[in-house]
Image 1 (cartoon, rainbow, N blue to C red):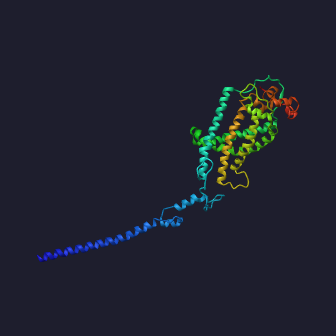
Image 2: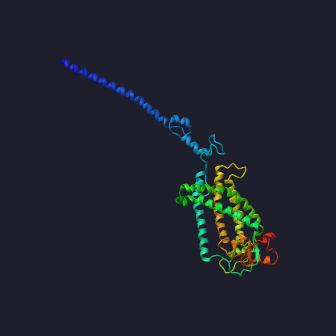
Image 3: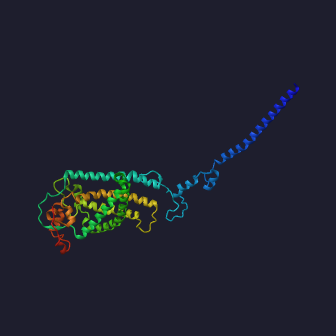
Length: 378
């Protein structure tokens, strides 16, 4: 019996000793783990001004310093081996353009273009086209209510004037069509013709736009100098503007060679908007010397160019309408250069009176050109 009791006590003692040893071993094993956890917890609190190399040690895989440098490159340019005036600037600094939020310059430009220039510019052009269509539907072509044709012709535009006008007109139409496709084509044409054809079309139109731009600029200067003399404002122009040229009456308000409306188009459209459009276009084409052509400069030029061209197209739409289907005989005057005396008296009575009084010659080009003058349809 005593031997049995001793055996049981010895077994219990050995079990207790093993349990204590296991607990000690567990505690010893847990100690390094706790230390590692504490160390990891300490490493998870990196300093905010760490470089990317330092961060890779405190928090491997955390690239926040790198992307912070990318974001701030508009204020503190980084380094790149690529050439250019803005090398090292991946994201522009914060600005607030008119109509945009305070954000990076690229995003601000995108907001102005997509939220203001395109929707409101497109709406303006649509309203102008709709108004001209309704006016033509209700009134039809103006003119034809004066005296019958006399067969006696007056030279309204010389060959030089017509050449300058048609060169500028063709360049303007090329720029307008290509600009409209580049601005609104992805909303209107792309779903209809597909991406492949649309890509080729926009590439061709962009190339035509870049070549027609300088031609438009040069011809615009020639047009301005050619027609400047007869577009100086006079007191009769105010009467014409106040009465809208007699548009809603039975007779037109007497005017000189160019009426008040044509002079408004000349000074506001050709001279005012023309200078803005040409100047901003030359910046976008990188044709002005001495500029660094930073992205911010190009974005501002694009916004000015877009706003000015929309206003110019809206203004010239009325001019094109009156010079083609809106007034009888107007297109023939620019095509052939001559108008009948009755047309001149009906639409520009003061100019007609000066011609009859001998103040202005009825034939201003060379005699050789006079022999080629065609018939005129009133």
